[in-house]
Image 1 (tube, rainbow, N blue to C red):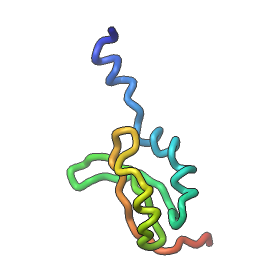
Image 2: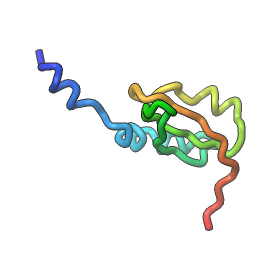
Image 3: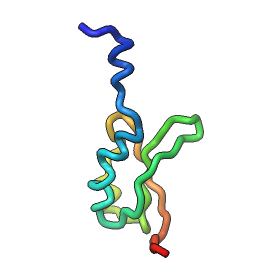
Image 4: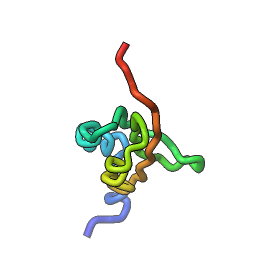
Amino acid sequence: MRPIFFLAAMRVTIQDVKKQHESRLMSMPGVVSVGVGQKPDGTPVIVVGLDRPRPTTMAQLPQSLDGYPVRVEFLGEIKAQ
């Protein structure tokens, strides 16, 4: 059995989780961004930006990814400049 400190060191970072799931999330209807943010208490979260409220997409989004909570924000349409 491995020591606890070894298992803690193996924890996947939130950036790794974002990178792993970003392309799948971005392919969902209305998703315009995937990023990393924080709750008011400093807890890291995956932030999924939607162009507008989309009940079907929101129902398909996970509440967490690899132990990190997912937060949805409505950003409006994003256009490249």
